[in-house]
Length: 292
Image (cartoon, rainbow, N blue to C red; front, side, top):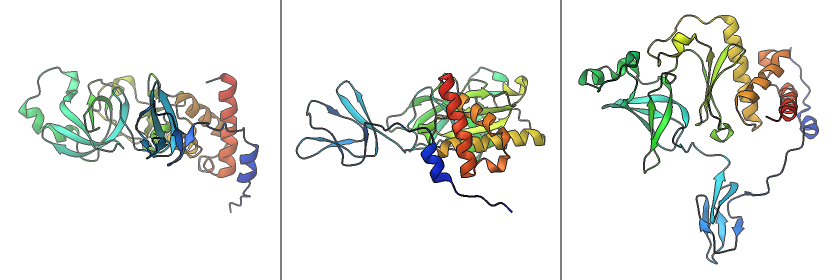
């Protein structure tokens, strides 16, 4: 029998203090009464020409432009972002992909690698073989190539590190929690690979060999995964969910430190409130000491 004493309230008080955000606003709050500023996303002008917030978020100023970045929103893509998406439809010379954005994204047939990385024009035969490579329900990693006028995204998988994803687990978090880094593909020393998609989708899988890793998803390893590898993936998944629940930034260092701090506990216990707070305190302390 598992009996726990709820001490989460006391633990929250003893945790390291959380800095208050000075420029946090809610809908209807007055941002400025100065008429010299331009209205950006998340703002509107009142009848007496004051600038008000239309969403809850953080005020950002760029010269004379003021906008409010929402605390919780769907993914707004930018060129160069790494995303994880799910194929929802095969269309003529393109795939429709769900990427947690306001509109579905597109992956053109001309924007994917051919088997073996062959470079040539796409033919009718390639169009007929589209479902052989990517079909409805498949998960892919890709990069944002361009943003259309309506805000929808055009993706590409021309690099061999992108492509169809095989055996692993998918975790969905808020896109605002994913920290922008130079790379979002991380081979962790614990024997797992994690892809932190800018769109809030996190993929965790056992680390593949270099030969399998550079096939663009055309060759998937579907052999049974060893128990030890499954336990590593499950522990990482719980660590990611723990960080997301406490609104902490997700990047390779924070995930790895949380994983290492959780090794003293069973996998199923990581998400228990009192144990989760203890793990996060160790992680936060280590991040502050090393300044990462």
